[in-house]
View 1 (tube, rainbow, N blue to C red):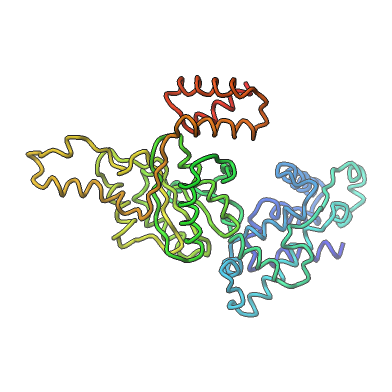
View 2: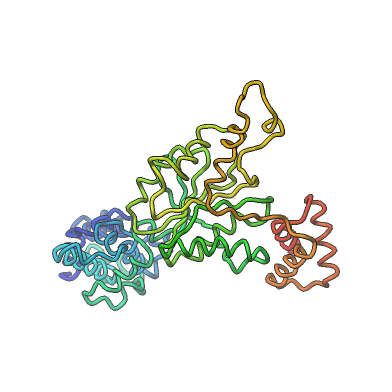
Length: 411
């Protein structure tokens, strides 16, 4: 009983990692410990609520992981400093407080269900139900907490590698309702999933690596035919460099005027960001067009040093061009200036990479590679003939068409 009460007090005293107590599992666990002095109905209600929550989170067999991961995903002064590799600048008092908090969270994560039940203040009143109650298993703590002996080295190393707060937990985000929101189910596409377009992807890959190494790099425009893997390339690169602190934030093109707000939120974070604008195009020059121009070059709220802009478009110059734009108009004296203004946006992307539809040979190579990867056993002549017929129904060959055809073979 003394051990359980001590852990309850330690959880109550969390300071640097105080945010952990606002997370669902630690909050419900602390509520359960606080119910040890209450009537049986209240204690059993707290017990049932806590176990139900563990089941919903898939943690009934791993309380230790559920508790310690909340610490790894917490956003506080220590985790932010550790992510930047400057935690020792915080001072001894803060480091000692962080050490105390981590030790308390780890101790709580190892508390067995029978120990909690045995600490109830009036055990006789639980005799009728105690042994029928479900119990959890503690399991193993998160890797950074394994072997914790008071040293913060392993925990600090985790933050340097993975970032802090929600950026440690998630790899991709979207700008929505004036804030950065995590994407729960992010596309797990990898660079190994692609066939063809090696030259184009290498350009984007090299540019991203230079960005992560602090070398000269450029905002990037991936343009060309639909279904050629432009967006998938950006997502795959985000996955490839996740362990080096790269995160993707998708910004809808209709919210480009919010770019200064996004900049304010990421400029001081230790991670590096690709701001991803998918399917970018304009029918005419509007406020979003002007906002993006200012972001890319020339505006006061320029992109921060820890961010690049990657955009995809089916149009080389992003803005829809008409033949009438190239002819003299009575309403526009300086036609050349008008054309320069139209082309000025795409010109501000330092790197432009073109993705065009593959020829027949390249298309069939993609089909064969995808079929082999999926373990499809079929005669080559039948595979090729079916791929060509499928492409005709889709209006042309493309990697997307190849993928859809291979997936149709499972139907």
